[in-house]
Image (cartoon, rainbow, N blue to C red):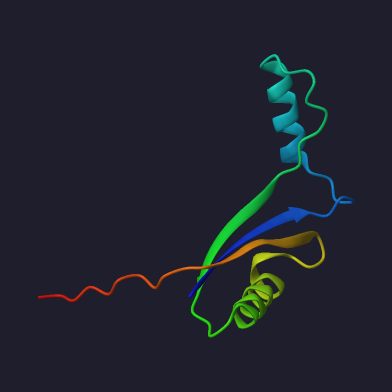
Length: 92
């Protein structure tokens, strides 16, 4: 069992209106040194795989097919950590 942390961000060439709005709000809160803000998404995926390589391949496939738009977004697998399987519970 592995846990993957994935960051999805807009490509640098894509405008980020949400980031611009956040930048303006941060500056309005008295932090004029904030030059730029780019927004993104974070995903934590728990993957049942026999190896780290197999888990990474599954995560990469999920990103390419669903989590990131290949036209406008990039993704990074920030961490791939071994995790213990959750304890199974039985209903009485």
